Amino acid sequence: MANTSVSIPSSGYVGRLAPSPTGALHLGNVRTFAVAWLRARSCGGKVILRMEDLDHPRDKPGAAAQALDDLRWLGFDWDEEHVQSERRPFYRATLAKLPAYPCVCSRRDVESAQSAPHAGEQLFYPGTCRDRFKDWDDAAAACAPRLPCWRFRVPRGATVRFTDTFVGPVEQDISATLGDFPLARDRDGAGYTLAATADDLAMGVTEVVRGDDLLPATPPQILIARSLGREPPTATFPSSSAPTAAASRSATATRASGRSARPASHPRRSSDGSPPPADGTQKTGRPALQG
Ligand SMILES: [Zn+2]
Image (cartoon, rainbow, N blue to C red; front, side, top):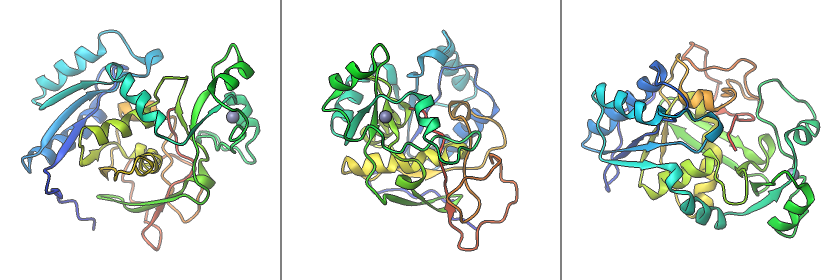
């Protein structure tokens, strides 16, 4: 049985609620937020509200204000409020500190490089553009009128291990299962993985509570944090059977339930009673990430 008690750092507990304005809140969001809020308030901790509104094509007008109204109506409160779309210069500065390189591959290019594509999985990126371009402008000239993206140069054999409060030990060899993952969609942009990691560190978040469909997004975030010389917050994934905003942001849930580096063939979002592997370690496969 996992130890699910709240661990309080000497600096104090800081939790966060991170809605996305892509539609109305639903039960899955509220469930995750309730766990996050209760864990923070139960130990006198701080709650940060962060509107994750970088996904412009999917953001709906008015949804951010509606989400805040709904959360207040439900009785949530928070001590700080941040809006990601107002923090782009910070993400740009963070990107500049990371081992990133421009990539001109289209999704189709990456798909056709898969040795064994599996429906619903995040693509493995084999590093095609690793040492291909001297800088962003060089890459942009090669793929105009499209724009390159930035990818994180994952060290070979980079295995990330962490212990989740509910799930237990998790490990992933990112270089073998995901490859160089995307950080930003264009020169100065920031994708979800980069922005959420940078914000959690800057805002002093000590524990992240979210839907366990986002479990596979955590190892890359840990890699980013460590690359910045920081330790990421503790991750907590109280299982949820309801879809969450985060779930809709991620194409699939890929927590693997076996010893293989491959994800489970059917996404698992619920505590469905499946036995854990013999060593109790969850291995994540090719995670679903938003660039
Ligand atoms: Zn590429």
